[in-house]
Image (tube, rainbow, N blue to C red; front, side, top):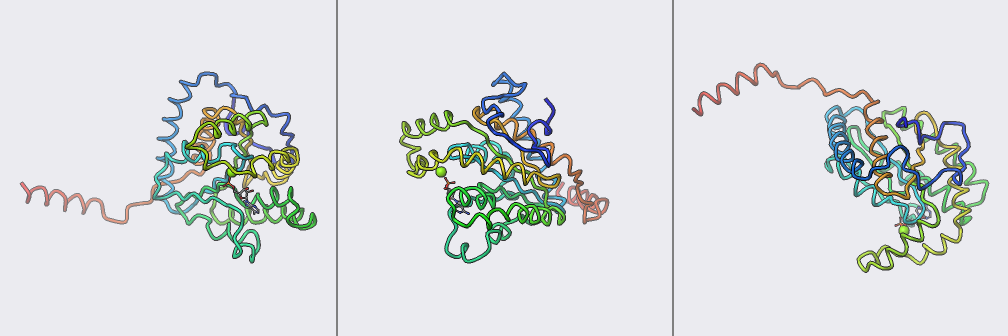
Length: 278
Ligand code: AMP
Ligand code: MG
């Protein structure tokens, strides 16, 4: 299987989620081997992020979208955590505040796009404005249907200004969601994660899948591709996302900056200090 191409939504193609097996683990069958590879990939991710931080010319946005219990938090916990927190910020986007609603829907997103050298992870994102907003009819169709082009233009603007964008849809099926709801119910330490809306939203599963299909089909571009990750198996989800992120960062061809200090002179100062210290 070729990464990152395998799971990438090719620009201009139409996604049909029911045709993508959420149980798939691609060519990877061995969970133990996957764990080892995940450690290696995590180390590589950390190196590449440090390089981005040092270079300070480009930035990275990672968008995570999924149905409830789809694994967004788990991805942050198991994949993003390998990077240095000094250069990474995770932004969860919840129901917009009064202040946020008083602005255009991209305002709260643009405010937290990463500075050069930094990574921003969007746990939910501007895509909610063509997902939950569409499914619940929070704005008229003529408003949300214009947003795909607006989102593409916004992401193009970010990309043209040095922000690399990678978007993941964590694809679970309806059965897996119920399993995860059950796990949450059975574990008192997970009860805080349960919302009544989990079940009312689940009733709108098909409408959400349709809304996702449109977002994935209309907004996967060369400059901000979507990846549909089979995510029923958490270990595979983490592996696939890590591989894609490593490829994405490697493709940016970043360089450590030239030292600002005169290294020969610093070496002389160092030798002198060693001699003096004895
Ligand atoms: P959670 O991610 O489980 O903490 O839930 C956050 C909730 O905020 C979800 O139900 C989202 O659908 C909702 N949400 C996020 N963005 C928006 C938005 N732009 N408009 C309405 N609801 C939103
Ligand atoms: Mg939730």
